[in-house]
Length: 103
Image (tube, rainbow, N blue to C red; front, top):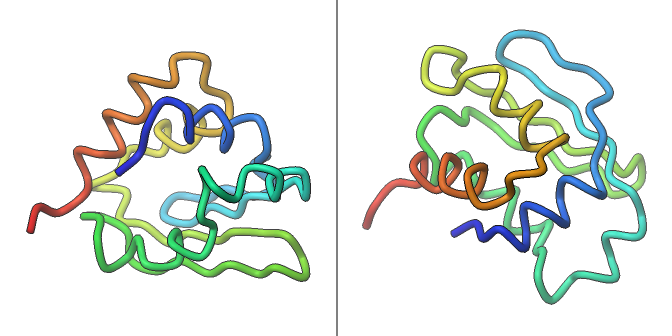
């Protein structure tokens, strides 16, 4: 479950480095480690099993990048821009939580 607080942390500590329809790669600022009690990067690896429209997630700790392959029919490309550049953290969290499968 995403909260406004973790969306704010993600937004401030990630940058889109490559984005094509259906695939996004984010650069992760090393300072995000200060928030490990609020952001579990390892848990992001399992989003493909929990969220509709996410096909795969790859976390490269050495390169400090997160690559997500997604279904652009289910997830609008603009949601990723919103995540990386959000100022309305609550709305972005709600949109992401709507993708999480129940049960």
